[in-house]
Amino acid sequence: MSALQGILFEEESVWLFGLVTVVMGGWAGWMAARAVAKAWRPFPYAALALLLVAAAVRFIHFALFGGTLLSAQYYLVDAAVVMLIGAAGYRYTRTRQMTTQYRWLYERTSPLTWRERPSGAASERS
Image (cartoon, rainbow, N blue to C red; front, side, top):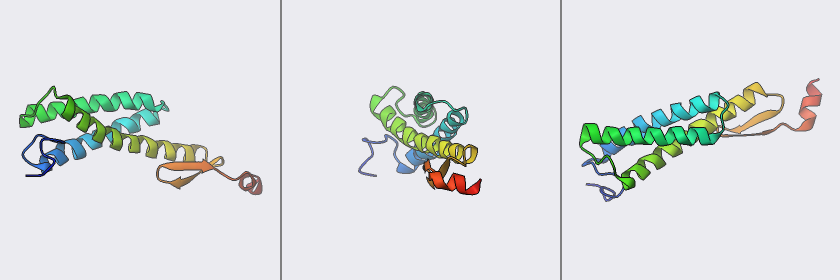
């Protein structure tokens, strides 16, 4: 049994936590945040959607595996994992939007960041 059992998750196996919270919840969080970003909505809309996804993850733990439904501790853990993965999905999508739709203004610096193109680069192509 893991040392984190009872602190981060209540199931007997860390694999169950990984499957439900990280894989399933993370995927749902990524997709929800991606949808919000594609609609050009600000991040608070994504945060609200991610909190709802975390509630759904807690329900799956409860309904399928006998976990505690109304547990602030485990909900916060689920919400933190979903929020982290969802925020990365939101930022990744927004970076792609900014660097493809406004490619003359912005260039990608990493999968999650962009920057303004140097002012000389735009005039050199004209």
